[in-house]
Length: 61
Length: 197
Image 1: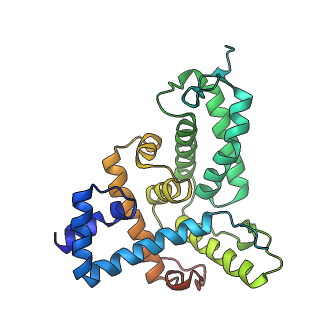
Image 2: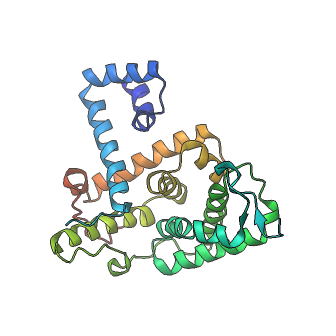
Image 3: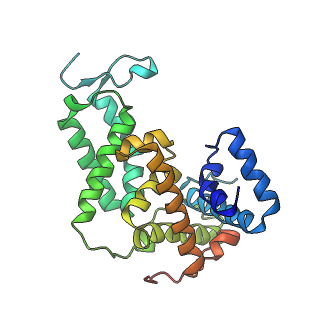
């Protein structure tokens, strides 16, 4: 897989919506591509930011 | 079974629900969806109320192929989109009206949390196209799966996948390019607020 193909699959990767074969191919690419790894990390943080903002907080004793 | 009784609980192995039961069990969920779509309490209350009114009027049209919640979501989203088409695009959100948990014993965290909430709402409401905002709310906030989103929006699962991907990128790119990049580091929002793009 090249960067363009991987880039188009990162959202599905985050949501665990890829089959095993494509998931492994994406992971192989991520291991050797810092740019795509960074792309994935920022997308993951984006999702986390939205979910964190919306999620009800538990009281801390 | 009465005229306002629905076999909506069939999949849960329960007896058919009364309208009152539906309204009571789904009220909070639909209000939360409405709140995240509208960005303020007043409009969210109106949208939730209108959603239940339309649902009540169209109970006979509920085919029970989709889940009851998905059906209500679809009504809420369609009502919201129709309303948005009739009003101006940019309206500011007052920080004070956003609900925040009571962490009076940790005021610094209250501020950070409120700003984070404000930034997310601000970006969703002011800097993303409606169809991106809607799909992000359904997925990230309401946590619907792809199939449910497809049913709510009346689009294919394949379209859900591609639209969600573009929406996430658009949200991220706005944060990175508009001064909200602090969110990406430590969840602290440094956005100045009313930056238009």
